[in-house]
Structure formats: C-alpha cells, structure tokens
Amino acid sequence: MKKAIVLLFLVLVFGGACIAQIVDQSQEVIGYGFGLNSYLFQRWQTFRPSFYNITGIDICIYKVGIPSSGISIEIKDSLTGTTEWTGYISESSIPPGINWIHKDVGYCDICAERPYYIILEAPAEDSDNQFAWLCPPALDETDYYPRGIADMTCGWPGKDYAFRTYGYPGGGTDEVSLISPTAGVTMYIADTFEIRWSSICVDFAEIEYSTNNGDTWITPAITESTPSDGSYDWLVPDTPSDSCIIKVSDVSDSTVFDISGIFTIAGSLTPPIITSYNIISGFMGLIPSYLRLNWSDSNSVKDCFRIYRSEDGGEYDTIAVVPPIMTFYNDLDYNPDVTTSYKVEVFRE
Image 1 (tube, one colour):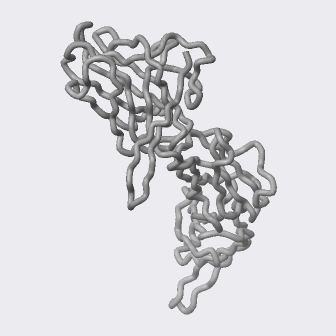
Image 2 (cartoon, helix red, strand yellow):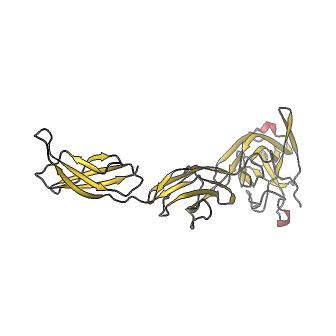
C-alpha cells in the first residue's frame, strides 16, 4: 500500500499578496488505529520537516461514543526534548466516526531536516467511549514516505499514524554567527579565552583556528564537536601570529559557518630582571635616604609592574604597582637596619 503526499493549499493574504501554506509532511493512508484509552492513552509519530516553520496539523481521528475530554497535541524536538508548541482539540469539535481533524498552529519556528514528535494524548477511557489515531497496516521499505521521514520511528513498531503538517516553503536557515574574538583582539599564550557565538538550528559545532588568515587550518581542531551552546573556553596555544582567525561551523553541515576577524596570539610574559639597588642619600635631613630599585623588561605588551618587599626573611608584601613605562621604583620606606629583598612581576590584565 503506497503512501502519497497530497498538495493541499491554504491561502493567506498579506498586503494584497497571496502566500500559500502547503502540506510539508504527510502520511495519508489510513487503516486500523490505536485507541487513546486506558491501555494506550498517548501515541506519537516522528516527522522531519523540510520547512523552517509549521502552521497547521491534520490528524486522522476515529471517535467512538462520547469521550469525557478532548485531545492534547504537542510538537517536541526529538533531539533536545524542547516543546515547540502545544494545542488542544475539544471533544465536541470532533465528529463521530473517522475524520481528518485540522488544528491551526499559527506560525511555529522549527528547524528543517530535524526530527520532531507529534504527540497525542487523551484521558483514560473505556472501549465504548474513546478516540483512536488511525494508521496503516505494517509497512515494508517500499512503502516509506516519499519525503521527510528517514527513520520511520513512531509510537508503535512497524506503524505510522495518518497525519499532515502544513507550513510555508523555506522561511529560515541554519546559521552560525561568531561574537568573539573580534578583529584586533590580542590573546596571550597559556591564557584562557572564551570563544562565543550564536546559532540557529545547529546542535553541535566544530571550532578551528588558523595562524595565516585561513590559508591553512591547524590540526587538530580546537574541538571537533561541542554542543552549540554559544561558549567554549580555549587554552591559547603556543602559536604566536598576528594573522589568526577562528571558524565555527555546524558539525552536520560544514557549509554553515562563520569566521572571526583577524586577531593576534602574542608570546607569554618574560619575568623582569632586577639590575641594581642604589641607596640614595638624603639631603640635610630634609629628604630621607631611600633605595632605588632598577629592572629591565623585554615584554612589548604589559599593563603594570608589581613591586614586592621582604624584610629579614619574612613574607613578600606588595608595596607598589607602577605603570608599564617605568623600570625603576624609589622605596622611600627602605630600612637600612634590616635585611631587605625585592621582587618585581609584570602583569597583563
């Protein structure tokens, strides 16, 4: 028994232009169904849309007697478990017997070529008062959907329930947008840098980097697969260059990607070297004696120097923070009566 897609059109008018919403996925052959009753009160069907939206659902329902309540409908992302839409069909709106029941969804954004569930649930009923979701007999591979559903998973092995989904063709795209690093940023070897991005309909991302503006990409990648949650902490490697870029791409579709602006990976900090201690004598008791500490530094990018002092073998305490242009410090609190040691550290914020 073959399945067919029937192109049903619902026409809406926006600003004088007619835009047709059409059937996206469908299974229209109906056969014996499964009751939504005390034994099986919930049934579900997987579909894989080709559009980026869903605007309506048709469900083939068999109504017996007068059930005590209606049917709840849910559209759920089968990969993330996220509920995209919920609806309800009242008992009184469903005629007796076998009928196609349409439910307007409005406009629900979803991801194309991604598996979703249609889930129907009704209260526990007896066999004389119940709903059944109709489905065809068991299928062989030649009867698979002509489009959309690759896995054929459903709420009962070997069965598919009769349904249609509507939407507007296209209407979206898979997307990755890099937020950081931005062009001109300087990173430093052995620091941790947060790579940030946003994405639409991307589950897992690959992150790569290049030190020659994309002529080649470093292997291995920063990560071959990480959840596309928008953030990844990167331990900056020892690959200094002023022509670095980062690429974030969809693991399942490498044509969906974004590339950062050019940034720099700079070398690690080299400790300053203390070159001399000079005691500067005071003047006529008006100016006390002090110690001048001098050091050399080879780091081209820095934010400050921090000076530490220890007296008589005690702990080193911070005594000053000086600008990066200075390579000396005058210790006005120097005490010639104790043994004094100094340390100088360079910092980048």
